[in-house]
Length: 421
Ligand code: PGA
Ligand code: ZN
Image 1 (cartoon, rainbow, N blue to C red):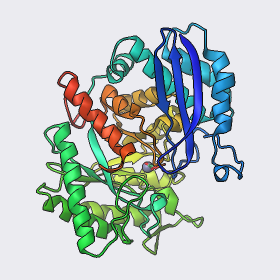
Image 2: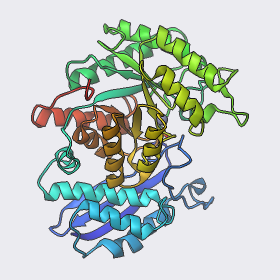
Image 3: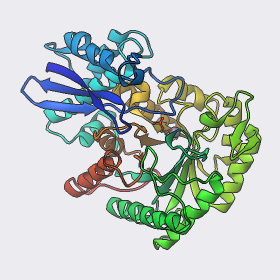
Image 4: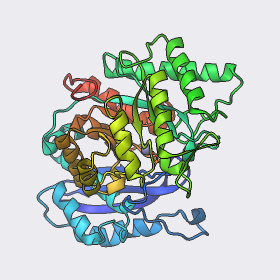
């Protein structure tokens, strides 16, 4: 039972407004949640509500969404008895009524949903991860952190078309050792970049943003940094995961623009194949654009046995879209972002569909973040084995990794690593 619901406009990690929601429970507990926000968003994501008033925050204000929480949503949810957090999510979906959460705003809805689930866990006297595992019927597991250490695309001002280059310490014996590997390689990478005369300024997710445009040149540097730090490049040590976010560099003519070259879908798949042959890349997210479904079928046929072929902008954590993609044999893995779909219940639905089809899943932050750590508990509770939350630097990124360390340190001994591998 919710006795009070209150939202306020706060800042995210990119100096843009977002919502913090405070929920007061019937027994006086105060629970908070912060709402993330993306930059390279999928067109079919649940709709984030921005004021559009250019006189405030360049139109990016969220006072309308805040107003919806404080008035309409609050009126609908407070003082009423709901059987579960899932029932409240259902009430939110019905109250919004649009299917895309565009009326109340997906940012307003997810803020309330996160707070509600956290309150339900607190009410049950459980850590959030354990409560999520009980509701989802999953076996908790500490995920492999995927550290985004070089930023390009929509997340940095450099000419690098691929958006994310991640370190995946798949071979680490434990979560703390995986975090250590990420931080140590990050430090060696910084030293190498500086020695080569590159800037060590950071992009939105805390990775370096050097003026390098060829993805292969970045991969080469990463392998060197992994070796410098004393780790083995590859699945037994530190592997690499990519998120090119290809929707962002596909031109209206249907060609992909990579480091000045114009590539067809098949050319780009060839390029990925050459990359996999040469570098220890184990996972590629959004290798092709969200509307290039034919390309995705060929991509999955050609590379699906060698790497994790993960959909983000193409799937947008939407159970209906994921189901359709599974039936068309598109991808073998899904990136999961709570604000892409707008409620925790629908997020868990999307993950259940993936599990049933044998698709792996990775829980993800957004490029605009708050200090909220809900997604760390979500990754542990659902046992999916993978989490990406940016670099091992910047408070809003590190908060999630530090929450994993806290869970590993204070909870029962949980298994660590990829699920089902
Ligand atoms: P976004 O990027 O949060 O800016 O959408 C993250 C991603 O593409 O995975
Ligand atoms: Zn992505």
